[in-house]
Length: 166
Image (cartoon, rainbow, N blue to C red; front, top):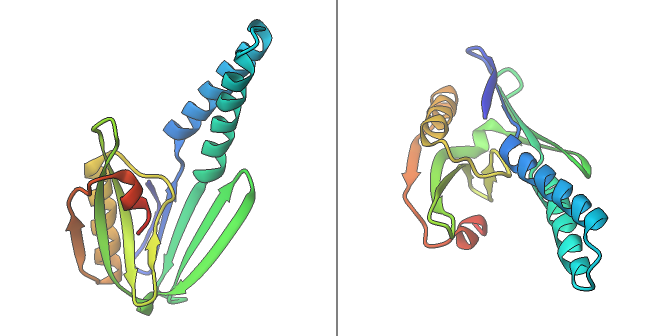
């Protein structure tokens, strides 16, 4: 997640999940090459799995643009992905806190997500988990200071699945 605009009254953050998209591209290329070079009877399922996996990554992890405006008193989250554009707006006063959540991949790696706490639901700044702890903490602190709301850190959860269900 990168800072696109930072003024006393406007904060714009952009997240492009390049690593995930690179994995999708690699999976797609592998599937296409397998389609060309493999002709064994059992290879169809493997090829289809690779191609579907690539498409799922592209659909599930769009570009996210988070726009916080004190003039308009709104948080706007725009997501641009394979299936089009999604727009959601929320009043800034409904957000009471921000949390950095830590999760664990099955492989043992750690990932982080930034969640805004409201009375009705939780809002995640990005669909994709982030792996750079310092960057996540810096972004969360920046949003916390900009909105003048408390920042909390929630240590590791037992599984990524439970983490994503919040």
